Length: 387
Ligand code: TYM
Image (cartoon, rainbow, N blue to C red; front, side, top):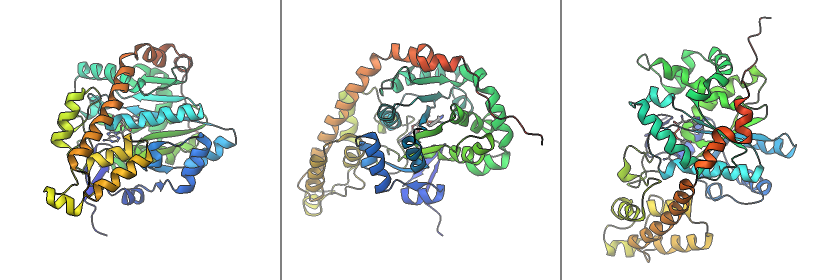
């Protein structure tokens, strides 16, 4: 089989990702029409990201829906690495998680990895501190229920989780993490230990855990699924998003380290306009003549892809844009204007909710119902059996 010309792991996404191939490589399953229909039926509404297949792959979601129907329920877990300010790619999985919480009325746990990013990045404690404060407000703006959501920083909550982490760490060896993550001799030992910490929240309740996240995080869940049953827990389920590519084209993923080619969550309308006009990759023809004749290639056009996958709820309007742009009737400049308007509409709402998020953050981290229960609780797993 030829080498793939893309790379996806929790630390790097590069090349033009073949999402079908990724499902095979990671051993996940595509969300098919039947699962989609069941999911929307039980949620009693459609979800744009799933409907448009931006959220497209899963592990064990069929079991999750069975268990939900049987009354066993589930809980949600996701996380954020405080490595810098957040971009629009980051926020999608939190909006989706909040949507699932509303529809299924379940608890959500959000891990803030102020340890992982110290090990993985060249970043100071002061920078981490600043990022945590900013990132939790971004996440809170996605609309979680403050009494059913627990946001915790690992370095702060570690004492409550450490007994369980010790049990996980004993079950995972170096060959596994080297195989799954490509860790090498030069990798610091913090990162070697990290998979035990990223997996502990999957054991916060006895129900099945469901993790909405980018598919880059899936390698962690493979480890969890190898060991969960040894502790009498269910294998975690996961539901995977694709990546939002950089504005500049379909390769790799949007990254905060290249802010010019990313739409940052705190960009103002002028910045959005400038970035989209200057950098948004166009699938249109090189000249007006060529464009009128051949139309645009929608599959690589950033504006069209973002409207389709993230922003435009109205199916009819989207179909009309697809039709006019792919036939050459609509020009790149025109679709960019539509994207600018929709992006600014989304960001305006998000920024307003972020500005009002302080009280919610306080509840989700410390004072809300679930937060208080979690601060009173120690997480442990079945001890070693000496039989
Ligand atoms: P982090 O901070 O790198 O990413 C946070 C979430 O954002 C997703 N993401 C993207 N999704 C779509 N398009 C993009 N361009 C894009 N960039 C990032 C990631 O897939 C992720 O879902 N180790 C984790 C933190 C973590 C976590 C978790 C994440 C701890 N526990 C449980 C998900 C679920 C990290 O550094 O994520």
